[in-house]
Image (cartoon, rainbow, N blue to C red; front, top):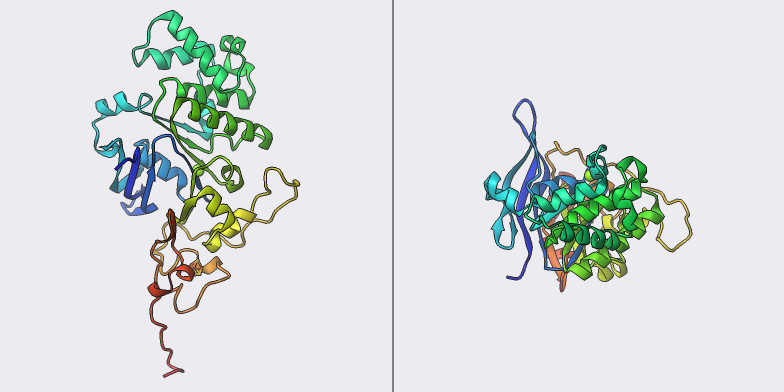
Length: 334
Ligand code: SF4
Ligand code: MG
């Protein structure tokens, strides 16, 4: 059906020492088309990293995928053997996360580390390796002389660019990036994001870019999904989401960060906290923070995700009035 990545009804989280399952990702479905740039945004703790790790088969114990599928080109990554997985990872998809720059080997020049990644997948000709490494550095905005550097000679932003170059080395069809620029200053973040975008257009790869900073995503993304308390509460084409956010949480998230081009004024966060993962949620997961909540409705039943415009879905009773439960009668009213 044309999807490169199709995550379906994914439930994931971790198992406590007592054996209880805590769900950080709740019935998430998400599709990514070939070459598409999909942004995923939400506050820290909303489950976006767990989703990234679960969908790419990187979740390690006590993390666990409880149910669901993650199909890349029709092949369920969650059902692959370890040997099959080793073949597809890096070649078909790669993953970059916030701490990735710390996985660079401090005693090897970055050239050797890029070569290693390519050699592990059968590229061995020295001239090809060197030419590819130079191309990759060019793609991520690094001068070729830095190929001879050791990681400690590079800034944080340069190291993260090296890691992104390694992730692109085998021209995978999909790169999943979980807050790859969050540790960097906002100007460098934006530059790197533009380089990632240019690389994806040139190589025709799809990108899933995960961040808590929605403002970073608006310009670059084709589509944006908003995650709250383990669920995708809204998903839409980026321009549509920006112009007409529907979920009260999306509206607040949109205003929690200054626009990239605007004045660097300080913005307030979103009052209140998300529910703890271990909570058994009743009603809309956002209801205790939502200024638009409808008592007797939002705290009673969870809103289903409904498509309100082409490509735009939202889980909120304000936009699915038919789905509202009948108002509960109180003893007084009776
Ligand atoms: Fe707010 Fe109710 Fe919509 Fe939830 S369903 S976001 S509580 S209005
Ligand atoms: Mg995270």
